[in-house]
Length: 427
Ligand SMILES: Cc1cc2nc3c(=O)[nH]c(=O)nc-3n(C[C@H](O)[C@H](O)[C@H](O)COP(=O)(O)OP(=O)(O)OC[C@H]3O[C@@H](n4cnc5c(N)ncnc54)[C@H](O)[C@@H]3O)c2cc1C
Image 1 (cartoon, helix red, strand yellow):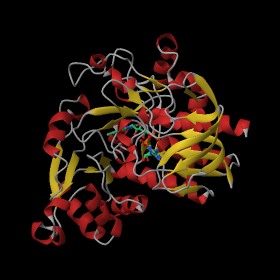
Image 2 (cartoon, protein in one colour; image 1 turned 30 degrees about the horizontal axis):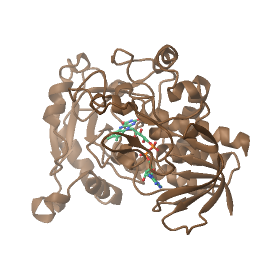
Image 3 (tube, helix red, strand yellow; image 1 turned 135 degrees about the vertical axis):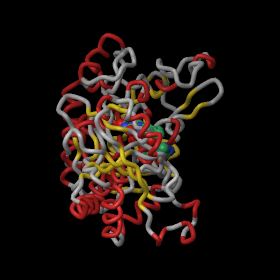
Image 4 (cartoon, helix red, strand yellow; image 1 turned 180 degrees about the horizontal axis):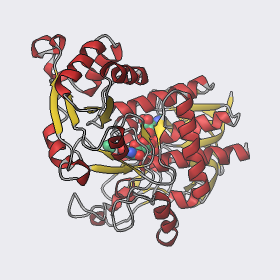
C-alpha cells in the first residue's frame, strides 16, 4: 500500500495533522515511538502567552502580528493568522464532537491557575480547568475550597492558597482547605509510592466511590460553592465523573494542573488518538522510524525498526518527532542534529551561547529556539536542498521558543493542521 500521508510522530502535531488529513480524504498512517509531550503538559493549548518584553499578554494575535517585525522565520509567520484561526477552530470542533469541550475567549487569552496558585495565560483549556472566569460561577463573597485527596503528595494546597491570597481576585474570598479521606485508601491499605495522579484518576474512573467522595466534599468544604481539586477526576469517562460529582455535591468543581503524569494531557492524547482511529487512520504506536529512502529530493519510503528494508511507502511525509524530550532533536557537545533524516537544523555554533546564565531567566534560553529549518511551506531542507514531499511540524521546528512565548501547543496544532492542508493540495 502507498499511503497518501505518512506521519512520523504521534504527538499533538502529528495527531492534528493526521485527523485533518483523513478529513481531506487522504489515507493516513501515523508511526510513533511511544509517549509524547502531552503527558507532561497541562492539557491546555497555549497560543502566545507573553509579549516581546516577557509580560503576560491578553491578546495572542497582537503578539503574533508583532513577530512580523522581529522573527520572519517563526512558524506562526509561515502559517499566517488565517491558518492559525482555522487550526484552532478545527481542533476545538473535533474534540467537541468527541465529547471534550474546550473553553476559549475568542481572540483573547484565558488565564488559568496553576497548582502553585499563580496565573498562567492559555488559549484553549479543558472545561474543568480553574481559571479567572470560574470565579463568576459563584457570588463574589463565596469561599473557595482547595481540596486534596489524602495521601496525594504532588500538590501543596497551603502553597497554592498563599499565592492566591496575593491576588486581588481572592482578597474578599476565604479559602478553605481539606482532604478527602476514604478508609479504602488509607495508608495501611495502599502502596504509598504509587499514589500519584494517575492512581487517583483510576479511582475516580471506576465511579465506584463517587457518592462517598461527594459526601466528603460537602462535609469539608462548608459554605464554599467553588471546589478545586488537582486534575485527577478520571480519564476516559472524565466528563461523566465531573458532571456526576457536580450533581451530587450541588457545587462547581474545577481542576488545577498537577505534576506529570498530567491527566488532562493524557485525556487529550487518548481522545485525539480515538478520533484518528475512528476516522479510519492507521496508528502504529511503538515503532521507531530509522531512516528514509530518497530518490533525489523525493522521499519514497521510511524504514522502521519493524518494516524490513523496503520500508513503508507514501506520497507525502510529515516529520513530527518533537523536540529534545521525545528524541526529535539530539544535542551533541558541539552540534544539534535531527536523527531520522539528518535534516538541516538551526542552532548557534558557539556551545557557550546555548543557554543563559540564570536558569529562571526572563529572556529565555537560546537552545529553546533550536530546531529544523524549513521552507515557508514547512518542507524539510537537507544539505541546503529543499525536499519535495517531506514536511515538518510541531516542536521539532526551529525559530520559536515555546517556554518564553507560551506557544508550545499552539505551534503544534497550527503547523500540523497547515501541513495537512498543503499536502492535500498536492496529493
Ligand atoms: C513539561 C511540559 C509542559 C508543557 N505544558 C504545555 C502547556 O501547558 N500548554 C501548551 O500549549 N504546551 C505545553 N507544552 C508544550 C507542548 O506540549 C508541546 O509543544 C507539544 O505537545 C509538542 O507536540 P509535538 O507533536 O510536536 O511533539 P511530541 O509531543 O514530543 O511528540 C513527538 C512524538 O514523536 C515520537 N517520535 C520521536 N522520534 C521518533 C521516531 N524516530 N520514530 C517514530 N516516532 C518518533 C515520540 O515518541 C512522540 O510520540 C509543554 C511541554 C512540556 C515538555
